Image (cartoon, rainbow, N blue to C red):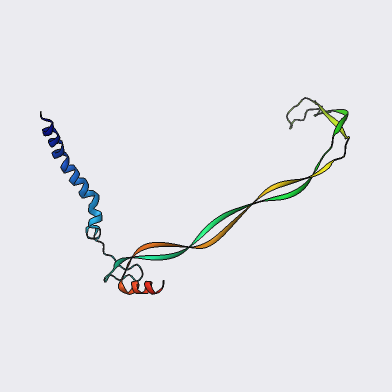
Length: 159
């Protein structure tokens, strides 16, 4: 077959799909209020007479969270050098098993006794502190509303 003929057949076969896709995709936007049986009414008073869409500036409050960081100084004591003086030993655990307590064999517990050689020194360390502050600030945004001529005139004077 001829290449132009093949391309022509593909285009002819795809046209109904394209038309239906276009129709279903854009029908609600083109005929929105008529297609769904809706009528526009005023967003403020509710009347239906002569309403039109208007861009209006709306003031709202917005919560903003800000985090502050700071260092807090704290005095600490650093021990000096020390030496091991003695090693202590003691047996821990019950010699006589109790019926309510699980059985355990006695165990040898060992610890060292240390004696300081030099004097301790003091130092300052900084501790990082976090503080969160929440502020409420005015925020403005544009909204689209259906307004009647009376409410539109009132909205223009209240700016």
